[in-house]
Structures are given as C-alpha cells and as structure tokens.
Image (cartoon, rainbow, N blue to C red; front, side, top):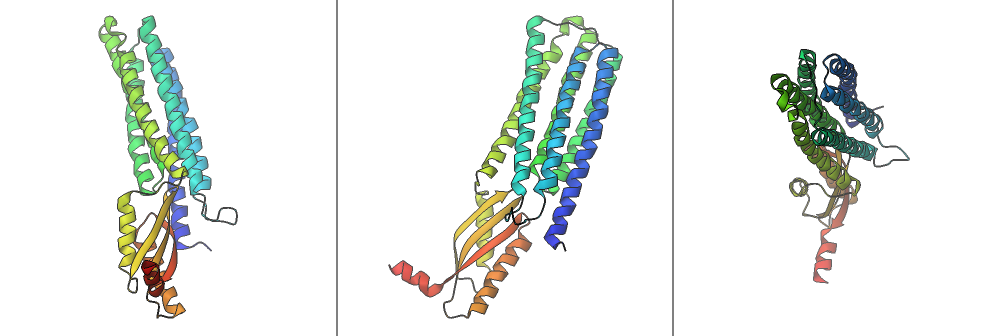
Length: 306
C-alpha cells in the first residue's frame, strides 16, 4: 500500500512524465518541419536548427529515465530513495545543453569565417515562427511542472526548449535580414553566437547544482535555519544541535539531535521526537525524511562542564 508521500511522489512522477512526452512529440514534429522548411525555404540556418532540435530528443529521453527511476520509493537496495538518479539525469541534461551550445557556436563561427550566403524564402520564416511559438509555450508548461514537482531535470529540460526557441529566433532574424538585404546574410550567425553563450551559462549553472547535490552539499542556509527553528518550537524540546541536511533529488534528508529533560520517560521522549519529525515533514514540503536523536539535558550539562 502506498503512503500519502508515496502517492504524492507517484503523482509528481506522472506529471513529469506527461510533460516530457508532450515535449518529445512536439520535438519530433518540429524536426520534420524544420528539415522541410530548410530544404523548401533554402535556409541552411533552419536545417542546422533541426539538428539542434534533435538534441532535445536526447534530453527528453534522459529526463524520462531519471523520473521513472528517480521517483521510486525507497527499497532494500536504496534505503534513502532513488532521488540521486534524477540528479544524474539533470547532469546529463546539462551536458546535452553544452553540446547544443557548442554546436550552435561552431556552426555560426564557421558561417562568419567562410562568409556563407543563402537565399531563404517565406517558408523558412513561417517554420521559424511556428518553432518559436511552440517552444516558448512548451518552456512555460515544462518549467511550471518542474517547479511544482521540484525536479531539476524537468526544469533543465524546460531550458532546453527555451534554447531551441532562442535558436529559432536567431534563424528568424537571419532569414528575415537575408530576405530584406543580402548584405546582412551574417546576421543569423552573429545572433546564434549570442544564443550559444546564454545557453552555455544555463547549462553550467544546471550542472553545478547537480554536482553539489551528488556531493551531498547542504541546502541553503535559510532552509537549515528554518529546520532548526521549527524543531525548537515543538513542546518538550529544550535545544537543537548537530543539525545536518542534504539533497536527494528533489527531496531533503535531515538528521538532528534534540535535547529533552532527563527526567521524562522513554515513551515521552519518543513522542517528542515523533512530533519533531512529523512537524518538519508536514510544514516543510521538500523534507522527505527526518532522523531525530534524543539527548538528555543532564548529559548535555555534564558535557558543558567538562
């Protein structure tokens, strides 16, 4: 039987899978459209953009695998859950974003260096506009779901969609400029270089966050302070110390020591620890597990005297 947390995790996984499948379908359609538009519209930039869009399919596949296994509940082999599988997937998305950025920049630099010229027509503009509209809409849909289910992999994939939209903007600028004045045929290449730099920055940030999670870096200081404050508000808790927390995918795992009166019964101490755990789980959404260790007040006083 699934717990309430398990049901929520399953709902989150299904939402993440759904938005990723929608993205895959849109990507397949766009790749076909861009190839057709590039050939019929005589636009080398649009054909290169189709190749860029194909990298989105790789990103979608990584996210699907990460969500499928990363949102599974804890088991005997993974007692702390499978959250880091999703973090690894997020790292993979970051790598694919960097590959896409390098590809765009390389293609643009070659075009500038070799002074490549083309004579695109209206078909290329129509496809570029459709790509921008669909990918920007897909970005907002995906990032909304990613933030709701707290999935760095899904959010990273949303940025992959936006990078494709920006790439298409560069194509649109270049195609329109070439149609207006053949002397401006390098405009799309220069715009693409700017897009690649922006994309590289987003990818580097995503990979840095993923590497921090994989190295068990602590959450932000404000989260640690809130954990400490909420635990101290539980009746019977005299002090909180040795508070530790780390990420596991979208979740946070917490360990802490709480000081209670040395004169209470074991049962009373257990109930205080139980209340601390439940309060943190209920009040702080990212927290998935809390381990509470009890320290008697008399022991803490003796340690202070020593």
